[in-house]
Amino acid sequence: MKHRVFFVDDDPKAGHLFARFCEGAAIEVAPFQQPDKALAALSEGRCDLLITDLKMPGMSGMELLSEARKIHADLPVILITGFSTVDTAIEALRLGASDFIKKPYDPEELVRQVELLLDNRRLREENRQLRSALGKTESSLIGAAPAMQELKSLIRRLAAVRCNVIIQGESGVGKELVARDLHRLSPFHDKPFVVIDCGALTDSLLESELFGHEKGAFTGADSKRAGRLQAASGGTVFLDEIANISDAMQIKLLRVVQEQQVIPVGGVEPVAIDARFIVASNRDLEELVAKGEFRHDLFHRLNVVPINVPPLRERIEDLPLLVDHFIRQFNARYERNVKGFTDEAMSRLRRYHWPGNIRELKNLVERHIALSDAETLDLLTPLKSGDSPPTDAIDADLPDLATLEKRYILKILERNQNNRKKTAAQLGINATTLWRKLQGYGDYQDKQ
Image (cartoon, rainbow, N blue to C red; front, side, top):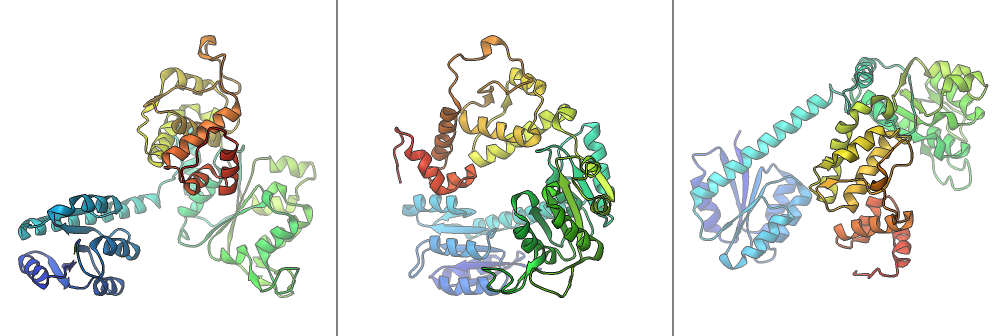
């Protein structure tokens, strides 16, 4: 099948000339003189690449590029520009254009450039499909320690069967990642994966969230709403921190797990569901059952197969792999080129006992990349405990926590070119909270 290329230029001769040069190639050219007609055709039909002149009446090539990207985010675009507008074309490259060619141009050279971009697009698509296929057979968990190899093997086996699972482990070990892998590697990976944090909701809110409600069931219930369990039909429900739910809620959940039916709040008729239950807790549920703090019947219904996720201190040999992974992640986010930590810093990281596990390590790496301009990082402060840095490595004048937070916030704000909305999102706080913090910094100058 031939590649379909849109050629947009208010000069009708330009498009027809390019089409003649493409006759021997696997390229079908659709010429347009009006950008708005090209956009309409782009919305309705297939286009593999767009070529547009920069200067056109009614809509510039830059505007066409912007609108075309809204329709097809990964569409390759080539801009044709006069010599006097090269700076504008370079700006267009920053906005997502694949390349630009100056007038007068050689049509044969333009054909070669089009073929190159189409080949690159094909290779990217093939790579994406290969990664997707690989992702359906391999765990996303990072680690080569024996405990992690056993965990990955267990996940692969359990993913193939639709049984309920309890995942246990300390806070920050990655229990939700395990649950997502169980779903992603399963035959029903294309069905919904619904997450509910049981520790964040009261009983009444949790019941409405899980089971849905009828119109008028309570104050504010202005319309009927389906619950999250119905939304998970055919897929997986992940109940995080299940040990936090009350005994009354445990009884209702037991009935749902047993019968695969829910009764919405304010309703009388049961509604069928079809979902696999994966639950997680950072507490030992079997111990809670023995103490009478968790129902034994619900525990046994859910505990078809238990999974225990090891803490970081029990697989400390994976620490370099995890550090490298987070460095790559935050280098991309903050546009940095950090190579790693110093040998002394890595030694101290290995000695640390990591009470917050992977989450704590991730936060540490992000904090250091955000605050440091060096390519090789040293630790900014001593770790809480379990770490024995040399005495002379600790600065007697270390800043307090508030000062470190201020540095951290201002550094991210600077990297985001003073964009408060983007900075607040990266910090995980709302824009109002960020603004209050900035107002508290006497030396902060608002540049917006």
